[in-house]
Amino acid sequence: MKRIALIILFLFPLLLSAQQVLTLDKCYALAEKNYPLAKQTVLLSEKTNTEIKILEKERLPKLDFNAQATYQSDIIEFPLQIPNSNIEPPNKDQYRATLDANQLIYNGGNIAANKKLKTSELATQQQQITVNLYGLKSRINQNYFSVLLFQEQEKLILSKMEQLDARLKEVKSGVKYGALLPASEQILKAEMLKLEQQLTQSKFDRKKALDNLSLLLSQRLDSKTTLVNPEILVSSQTVSERPELQFFNLQEAQLETSKEVISKSNFPKLFGFAQAGYGNPGLNMLDNSFQDFYMVGLKLNWNIFDWGKTKEQKQAVDISKEIVSSEKETFLLNNSIQLKEAENDIEKYEEMLQNDVEIIQLRDKVLQATTSQLQNGAITSSEYITELNNLYESRIDQQLHKVQLALAKANHRIIKGDFK
Image (tube, helix red, strand yellow):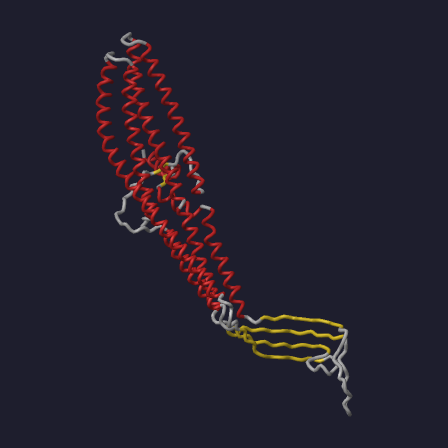
């Protein structure tokens, strides 16, 4: 006895692992983690960090090496001969090599503004991915509750087969002793085969929905996977928490940041520069020999008049903000309509389930009376099967309405964005 207990204790974890149990929230989490689009969140972050590093390099000095050799058709000549002087005209062939350095000193905060814009763009792009991943929840709902429906249908078909098998054994006994005609047994056998067909169809339909769900989750699911019927509470709060709203807000913030970049682009830019070189001639054009030379200085660049370009660019940004605002209003309107439809569906299925309970109770009483009549040979097998089908159709309708109610509640939660 102790040995058996030890074997059961050893095998129990293996039995649990063999049967995979999935909840709806677990499916959501797996999709957000494993769906290929989710990888873009990290990639976008890496891309933005690289772009910011590139912007930072604008502050570093720029070094350029230049070299040239030229031959010109004419040169500078002095028209008069100056006494006691030996000024030679420049050579027609000239050579120069220089190392030029430029250092940004001030650019009106343009680099900082562009870094801020890159960060804002990253937040918007990542939120767009969040919105796209959120859209998977509706697809998961459809497949999850389809699997759940077929799962419950299989249970009902098996229960119906069990009950029909009991009647078949009774009829066989009646036929054997001549109390019932052989046709009664044949009718029940045909109905049993029909139920086996329905069970096969239900299993394949469940497998199809399960395979679709498996692809969405990037998780291997098989026939042993059991889905849990979720208990979903419908929140009474009216404020929508959909990720699309945060996306619209981030778009507006990004556009506002772009206006700052536009303003900074017209600020004065101050550079320091230095040049060291070697050539013939050098800076002294009257000395026809190879010389080294250098030059240092400051350079200011300020576009003080741009023909209203900056103003028009800002106007274009303001128009884009109005477009985003109108898209947000449209989304809220459509979201309210969808929410109202979901609430109506919930009320509809709740009322239908109340009727289902009464219908099943009545059908069950009728079947009990019919079973007694069949056992006593008062009715035919066909009449019994009719009432048996009526009862199980009612039970299937009840399970269908339960799943539809759960689906309506799950869709209501998605429409509202209520996942706290």
